[in-house]
Image (cartoon, rainbow, N blue to C red):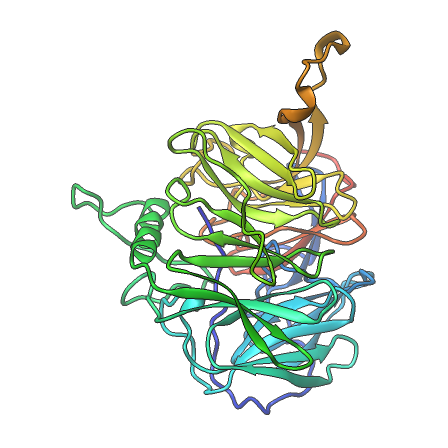
Length: 452
């Protein structure tokens, strides 16, 4: 299974803040806009600048007004106008990890390693011990300011009212792939290698499981912390020797934090919530069978539901599962094998889902899974209106009606597409190497062409 890809920090003095035009896109095999011949949906290439990186699927990339989107490149941070699709540079500065936009303000938040050091080769996001600076840039003007200093670790998320950030830090770094970088500087693709019990090299996905398990079993002491953005006060929320990762504040409740226990999913109890005062530690999903897995969790835009990829068991039966944080009720939508996706996401109105597909090496071993999908949920009703006495306490089942949006047959899934609905729900933004180099694209959800 996939987890958050790391941004490779590059050395440049932290004072180099200046607006500049975005680098010109290089020639590629298709025009900047075309109709996918197999789906009839229009695709726009937003950027193929070197080192570009559209944010991970559960990070907010959009302004509160829904008119602009941020992404990073090797040069720094760029912004897209979602009405004209024009791209311009916002911040030209290296040693940058772009984080997210604010929920309330038109601000792009990013971190800088104040030592000027690049990320340790192959180190996990929790393994950084160098001092860290959190910066904020006005998305309209590019004016930047330093917000706080941190001694170590990583900032992962910001709460709904933009008063706190949360992050995690480990007692020491541990490279996931010893001797090799965790992301290739040329392809943006993760690299993992390991041998199986027979001494033969494992496929990419299984080699990654070995490396994740190595990190989990190291039992490195970790802590989740918050920092008050006005006072700079740092508080520890949770300590453990579990591998703590994927912190996500509720988009509506400023004091509710979701996080995960990282590692092989069939081995860990992955999804948890906790209050920022350290109370109400809650496990979101309880495994009921061996090899059952749950993960790649994300919040619904209204903050009411935690959604996640559920498999019962791994690689056999697939669901997108939802957990209501207030009522504890659950809804599961069944997913066919070929529609299983590395990541899913939800439209801003909560009515539609999308998936980014997967290749034959991944957990679903799909024969025809390399597509971007629109997934429309359908409830499974009671037969003839006859209800079980305890129906309201049981899991509410459903299915998805899939529609193919983008042919990703030429995409290498070691690069995760990481889909985002635009706030108007008219487009899906994703990244792909389907043209050879990594690009950021948008596909129109309404079908505008014919299928050949």
